Image 1 (tube, rainbow, N blue to C red):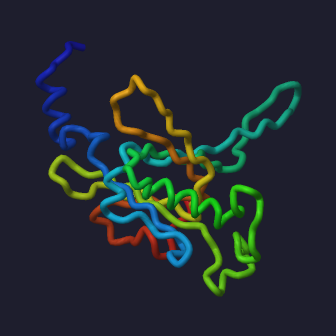
Image 2 (cartoon, rainbow, N blue to C red; image 1 turned 90 degrees about the horizontal axis):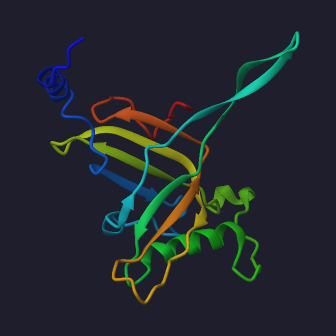
Length: 198
């Protein structure tokens, strides 16, 4: 089969030129704004890198007649990581630290009766949040939305300090979550109201 650059470029242009990893937006929301504020629109601009979430079905080995056969196991979700540009006020980092304190107490191990207590959900003392990653097209329209549910920070990365460095500080945040839903920008289905469990 002959290679045709014209045909390849023509097919790619029909697909909008291909999705671009730099065209995205991220929203990270706390479920309890009275304890931890959600990221503001200005702060979300500091989320330098994120990812559309992955999904895995673990293989379950079933032994029969001297062989191991693969069967479908549990669905699992990897830690979702974002990279943040640090501002001089440490605004996002401070919010993540406060969110983590709300989940598991202070750095010295002390905690009060409200930290992470699931029995207090009726009074708002529950700290899972959600996040939405939106893939944008080259024309700026929304192409896909991925919403991650029951999300909370599990890893707050270090910030490297170096006298010989002349770059902006960056760090990573790892989030655990229970599941995600996906929809197009023009879909009539809501990504937040009774989402399908993917």
